[in-house]
Amino acid sequence: MADPDEPHESLATHARELLDANRYLTLGTVSPGGQPWVSPVYFAWADGWQFLWVSSVDAQHSRNLADRPAVSLTVFDSTVPAYHGRALYAVGEAREVPPDALDDALPHYPGPPARGGGPITREDLTGDSPWRLYRATASEVWVLCPREPRQACALHAIDQDHRARVR
Image 1 (cartoon, one colour):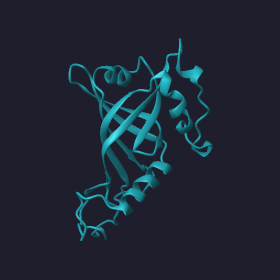
Image 2: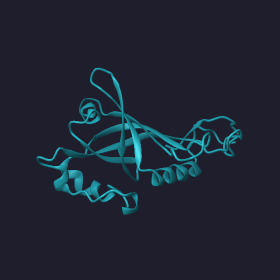
Image 3: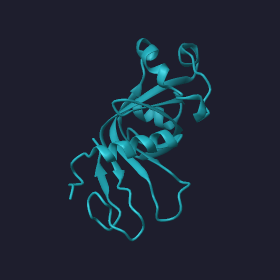
């Protein structure tokens, strides 16, 4: 059996499918005073386990990131039946994408048109605009190992919910 602490390509494929199928992630930040804060944000993702979203510079999570770039995030499918959970978990650091890096980041956000996001331009994210593009780069990524309820997962033979490392 595979070790849940060792990355496995089938789980990386599962993680990418989850990211492609979902539009929102739950972003966890921490205020300068240590207060945790979670926010749902529309996101797109790019290779290298990068997660992109647009937020107001005045949003609580944006203000938190200005002082503390550490983040946690979860992407999950809330449409599946009970006890069929599918989720991705990640930790890393997030920051506002600086103006000189926007041209590299904007081709990835908001993702393919089928995801429903409208086009975003450099002008939407710079100058007097209150909006900025943010990027989280995950240093560690896990998935809730896929399995049927009351069945052991095929990869690890574990018969309870467990996270398995992707990165």
